Image (cartoon, helix red, strand yellow):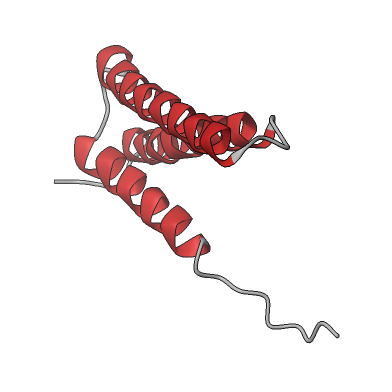
Amino acid sequence: MVYLDINSAVSALFGGAVSVISSTAFAIIVSSKIGFAASDTIRLALRAEAIKIVLTISLLWAVFKFYVNVNAIVFIGTFILIVLIHSVALLVTDHTNKR
């Protein structure tokens, strides 16, 4: 089975794009409101997460529905890899000395 063809490259591109688009939507929604009480902040974060989940599922479905030559292993593998990279990005700290 060949994984190094144009369909695999496009599948990898779509897999990464699904994660990036849904994470960008989450970031835009969360950063749009400032100065709320704690309960409003939690409500906003939950709403943004719900939109991210719905958008992710919709985009995954759209790729499988409309891209006939999708390489499912590469597509889902790239999607999972990008999701994991976004999770690890939260662990990065700034080690500069702030005085």
